[in-house]
Length: 315
Ligand SMILES: NC(=O)c1ccc[n+]([C@@H]2O[C@H](COP(=O)([O-])OP(=O)(O)OC[C@H]3O[C@@H](n4cnc5c(N)ncnc54)[C@H](OP(=O)(O)O)[C@@H]3O)[C@@H](O)[C@H]2O)c1
Image (tube, rainbow, N blue to C red; front, side, top):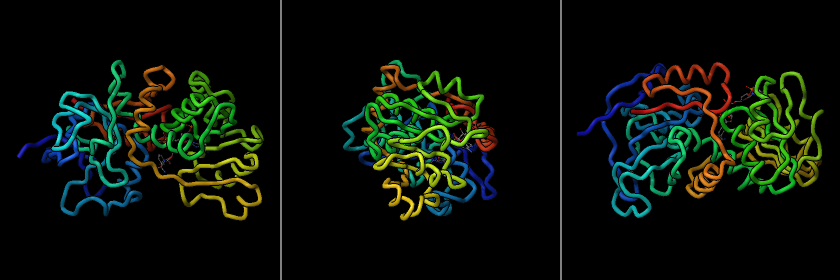
């Protein structure tokens, strides 16, 4: 049996770096030799026993967290025509089921991953998928943000937010972004047109008549507050079902609201890869550590996010 190193979560939620058996690709799957694995809030929420439920991990098997992955195809299962060994790929396989991406090798459905374009840094590619897909599936797939739209991104300096700002700009929108004041300059560099300091200002006082709001904070009633800044016919997307505004509030304001849960989608990854190649989308790495130091990356994320993404490097 082949083995590999992986970050395994013990029963008390501690992250250890140990040897485990290496997965093998089934038909339609690729085995990826991982070079970078992005780290997201859902990782520590799952580690703490929240969503997605820990029960989705097979009993008796090591709990290996992580969904974001970039690396080289090591082997392709029967029926795979999209990739061959040696191709560089990235993706967020299987979510919300376990993907076990905190490891040296990961298996993914061939249509859950996309090719990393030449010239794109593999670490940036590994940090992109979950956060980028969330932003894309909200702004492009759900809200159809278009040229000239007025868009508010609440919590714009985090992993999802800094990508959402750039995706909204690439769609031609005018972008309002909330973040701590110390992060405003970097958001301006990424294209944000109007900055709001969420610790001293209320976004309701800083923008109005918006076509779309993407609320990534989704706490303390922020999605309900967001209804007030939307024009009639505008749309709200939030990332927590618990915070959706009630039907009467939405009907009175004549706006739509959706909670989304990110899903694997190679076509959206390809669209974002094109934006990366053109220079319209940059992944800012806020903290990077070797895979064996995953515990430290979780502590950095839980302690107040640095600007952009957290990512582990492998090999
Ligand atoms: N439903 C889904 O499919 C889905 C997918 C991805 C993420 N999510 C969720 O979306 C959230 C954001 O994810 P992420 O990866 O971007 O997290 P992150 O990188 O940890 O960023 C969180 C951001 O929240 C901001 N923030 C803190 N207090 C705030 C406030 N009072 N008002 C506005 N913003 C505030 C911080 O900005 P400052 O540091 O500038 O203050 C920080 O940048 C997480 O809860 C995550 O679990 C859900």
